[in-house]
Amino acid sequence: MRVPNERRLVVWDRLRGGSAGLLVLAVVVGAGASLGAVGFRWLVAAATRLFSGWTDYAGHAGSAHGWLPWAGRWFVVAAPVVAGLLYGPLIHLGAREARGHGVPEVMYAVTAHGGRIRPRVAVVKSLASALCIGGGGSVGREGPIVQVGSALASALGQLVRLPDSRLRLLVAAGAAGAVSATFNAPIAAVFFALELILADFAVESFAAVVLASVTSSAISRALIGDHPFLALPAFHVTSPIEYLWYAGLGLVAAVVGVGFSRILYLVEDVCDRCWQGPEWLRPAVGGVLLGGVLLAVPQLYGVGYPVLDRAVVGGYSVLFLLVLLVGKMVAASLTIGIGGSGGVFGPSLFVGAMLGAAVGDAAHAAMPGHVASAGAYALVGMGAVFAGAARTPITAVVMVFELTGEYSVVLPLMVAVALAAGASRLLSADTIYTRKLHRRGVDLGRDAVQAPAPTVEAIAGALPVALAADARLAEVVERFTDGRYDALPVVDEQGRLRGVVPAVEVERAVRDASADLTAGDLAASVPVLRAGQSLDEALDAVVRAGGVGVPVERDDALVGWVTHRDILAAVTAGRDRQAVPAGS
Image (cartoon, rainbow, N blue to C red; front, top):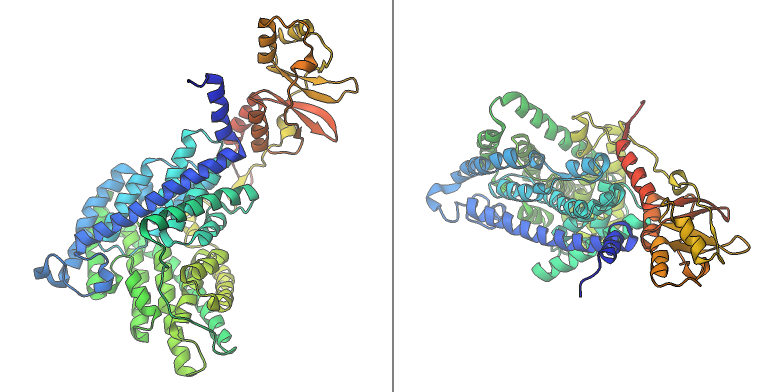
């Protein structure tokens, strides 16, 4: 049986404007982000296998190509060049916003463009980042997955024509779903989306992001298993004096995190000044330099999680840990600078693990038998450097705890992360993410001031003259003949609202020749809006009322009338004043 057009429109409006509809979309986005994340991980593994002959070459650093043993270890010089010849033109012709580390692009889209991201970004970013990482690019896969998940969410939101306020929430939900599937960390993914992408902890935001994160995690666990990010031995705080070491680690992590941000953009500036050729060729030519770095330190090939694992269990000397720390910052910065595509979240964790392990070894040398193993310091260093670079302390604490499942490191982790985030703010006004936008002249904190959202009372029209409950059908028909309203309020003898009479019900009564009906008989109950409610709540009420106008109440008195047309006019005007320049 075919659903009538009217009913289909009501269902569509409920999906687009109702709170329940947003939650349904969040579940769909979570499922899509999970499949996208799993697919992207497969792409990275396949590309790495193609370019190096190993599923993850960093774990076999220094070995020859798995399929081309005659090339020895020199293939690492050619791999970034060949990869650059593939993803350079892809980014240049497909979606130039896929270049770089991705998260700033999502932040900017959410804040300045109402969450609008071109759908093609998801495809181009996936392919380009997989080729870049597989070809030796020393960057992470988290930033690309966040951009892919956000682009998928934005495409769905634009398809159903979500208003900007809800589209932003859906994009953040897509980011949460992507992180959740990547790290198998649904709780941390929620805080990542709320703290970094959305900067909003409202109830509606929390509900949508949580549903997307949980859905994504459940699907990814079903597809690839429920495995922790790191397999670790048990850690514990041996002595209270250790907290001084962790505090010192936090302060040093702030310097390293801010330093990583500075090196990243310094290298990008140098690459910009030196390169005068076509942009599509830049990754291939710059790949020669990246290949030289990988030849010297092959452990920097790709994401490098096997190397991180070994550092956490104490597999390297202090000197080599420092080489890996500096080398990762240089290699990641060079990968981004030559036009590569990949994230900086993974490199931040890598650098933090090397720093923490080095501090842990130093603590052991200074106080043998009185400090925990170097692995505990490596874990804390991961969160502290990320907090120093991105200044998202809640995400850093929850992420490291959830990735490792080690509750014993929570207290020292909180100490180090708090100090790293605080010291980072003293050292730098921006973060590793916002600095990219500042360099374009975009300051999400000062240059873009969000115009206050109008309330229901501000958009409400005049309240129509109410029908008396005992008004006969003929009188009701006469009131509707002027065509000004699709519905009229009905009040009883005491002036209290009995409901609303839709024009369609009047037409039906006339066709049925029900002349003895009164306005009270035709009245239907509808939601009553309060003067201070938001446009989203107004749209929800109008949808639940079947698309007709609804009354607005203030101090128990009816003061206005809101229709779909009023909401549409307000939303359209709001887009024009989306970002008001400071000082204007």
